[in-house]
Image (cartoon, rainbow, N blue to C red; front, side, top):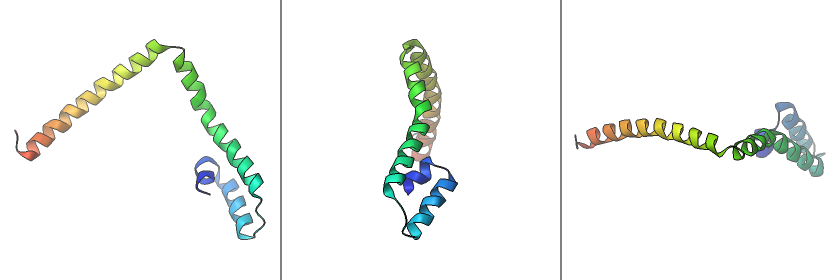
Length: 88
């Protein structure tokens, strides 16, 4: 039920938990519901990936912006590490 819990709503999870407890669960139904919930969750991500694949310049801009942010954080971390280790 872990995947169902991650991808589905509480009502659906409770329905299948109740069926399992009552030993009336139909795993074919569970698998179908789970597959549909996973597809529904991943669909916007897949759409965004396709959109970004059409625009490599946008990807480069996003990556460069992220790299600049990470560089600032990494420099601050390294400064703190050197201080704690006694290298500064």
